[in-house]
Amino acid sequence: MKKDDSIKMKRHIRKGVPLVILLLVLTLTCTLSASVSREERADGLIVSKLYSTEKEDNYEYLTMILKIGYGHEPKEKHGLSNLTHELIYLLLRSTSALDVNYFPFAEYTVFAFVLWQDDFSKFCSELDAIIQLDALLLYDLCNQLIYQHYHTPETPTNTGQRIIYEILYGPTHPYLNGFKADYTQLNINEVNSWFREIYKPNNIIISTTAELPEDFLKKPSGRDMEKIVSVPEVPAISAAGPAHQFTEVHAPFSTIFLSFPGPKPNTNDFFTARFIQKYLQHQLWLRLRQELGYCYDVQVNYSYLSEPTAPNITIAFQVLPENTEPALHEVFNLLEKMAKEPLPSEEIAYLVEREEKYQRKNYSTPRFLSMMDAIGVHLGITWATDYEEYSAELQKLTGDDIFRFTQTYLKNWRLSVVGPDLADLNANFMQKYRAEINK
Image 1 (cartoon, one colour):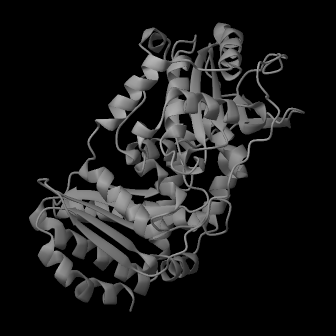
Image 2 (image 1 turned 45 degrees about the vertical axis):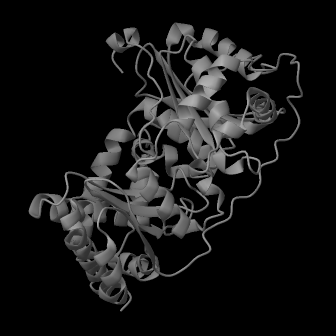
């Protein structure tokens, strides 16, 4: 971050498509020369101190993770977690932090800060005071946020993603809580109660490039800061086999999500899945955009950071209605080829080298490293701050690993298509594609 950036306005939270947030976080990988020291204090706060020779002058970075997200909300109170964090975010924007970002996920919530070095102690005092509040008491602002959420229409992209989650995880899975928010059922008293329940040292992980003050979160508080936070377990994916849903909406294009259940980030198949994500991104970009011109953008996301219990690999793109079936035909042709023919070793080596170069840049960025350090502590992934380990695991990949992965995961595809004039596609789809990918 350049010094001139310090005079810019603090960022507003990005309210766009969840995929946009997810893409940002998927690039948050770590630094080549970093080392960390981790401590769990007597009050339960986990602190990871980050050391890096690549540290930028005059700036410090702090990432705070709340080990609870919208997937843990009380029954019939969907939207409560997001509303609470939004209010905290707005309070944090008034602190001395130069930059504040907020990322809500189903299993945890992330706040990321950029700080002027001389303001670090002051900011820690401000953050301390906000966490220790006994009540938020932001009645007008709470009502304004509720009104804003209530009157925000659902886009075709949100509709398509909600449907793909339903057929990936089942309609009652807590990952769908974010799509079921009913802000008319919430009020500031419930927000205050939820805030007091979850904003506690024993529910927080902090990664920092500077030493926290000795008395951070140790001052007397008007509420119980030691009570253990109860977090219900999030179930994994239960459904298996192909499934699809076509939903007609009034839009000039079709929105397509094709997803596969994926491995967790701390399992042996993780690096194979990471390679598959990059391979699909590369191939579909060439086929759907460069060669055929069906779409401007195609994204292949692997949700291993935002959904650690039940991650997925998702292909997402938008096409003109008349190109919906031809585009899907290209995608399924690629998947069928991957399931039948092992990739050449030269192609594997090429993509691994590309990935290593890409990650080398990310691993040298302290701002991103701070976030990955906090997430790595939470999820128990050591490669989060170790480029050499990440690279070594990539180098172990073989054609057999990739071929086995395609046989295991790609056959369990789920498809959501949202757009106009889908009746003919719905009638013909299963006969044409379901059998092919499962041969």
